Image (cartoon, rainbow, N blue to C red; front, side, top):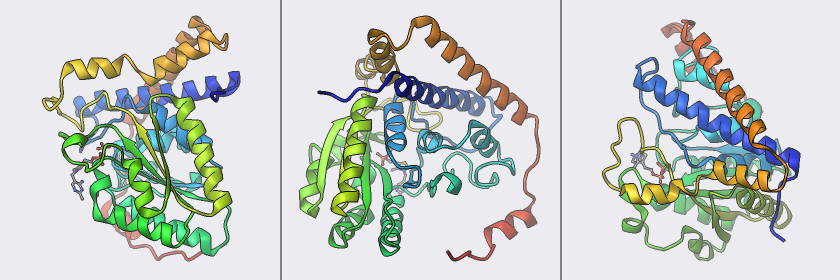
Length: 327
Ligand SMILES: Cc1ncc(C[n+]2csc(CCOP(=O)(O)OP(=O)(O)O)c2C)c(N)n1
């Protein structure tokens, strides 16, 4: 029988998905009004991946994320407060305000962070998995990457190394059909990136990335396999970003018809409908959930927007060049 969330779990996951969606919608508005600076990559539409991966892991498992990192960061345990402070460049932000939208890092919640260099997190995650293996840790590392990143040499090298060295890493390909304006169909040599697994001797699977219950149970199963077999795993989740690639993307490389088709498969709507049909939620409760999440995010964003505690150059330099702390 297909996996189903319990009533409590389903409501928690729905709330997490809404927090991710509304946080990103708020951030989009704040960038548009120039209250926040730099650029940002939203993952609106990909919330079933955010909410289906980290909640299915052990809290001490690690993640290494990408330039499209907001939902992953939130789902691994960061607060909206710490994330919004980072977006604003404030010293109480996740990276002391030095990283911004693309460089969220949250060691407390075992999130090793992200970088703007596409695919660069995958070898880092593989190296972390090597260290976990050396320490005989029961934990694993999730390496998030996109369909675009799947063509990078470092990603292939990392998968080969993880297989040869039996490393506890879950290669999680968040396939949203596009790398910037390039459609995966014109750039990736195979129909499904999971089909590359056997080439590395790695167990692999492709699943629907817009169904959070499917993502969650596939991740649970992959994590169980990695811990028991002490082998890596490649999971491809198929999804779609409703938003443009980054700020100011007019999305001329895809049709409105294609967007409409994916919008009709909105992962939040899908979970909401399932919970209502199972008697785990009623429409009024859902509306209250939406209102309270939106107003909490608005309140935090307004409050932080009036603050100015930023690191000065000397403090930033001391932080950047602080000595490495060996474990
Ligand atoms: C090494 C490198 N090459 C190119 C870029 C420019 N770039 C930024 S995001 C992106 C697309 C990445 O696509 P994908 O891996 O599918 O992730 P998505 O943006 O879809 O989440 C590219 C090419 C970069 N940041 N780093």
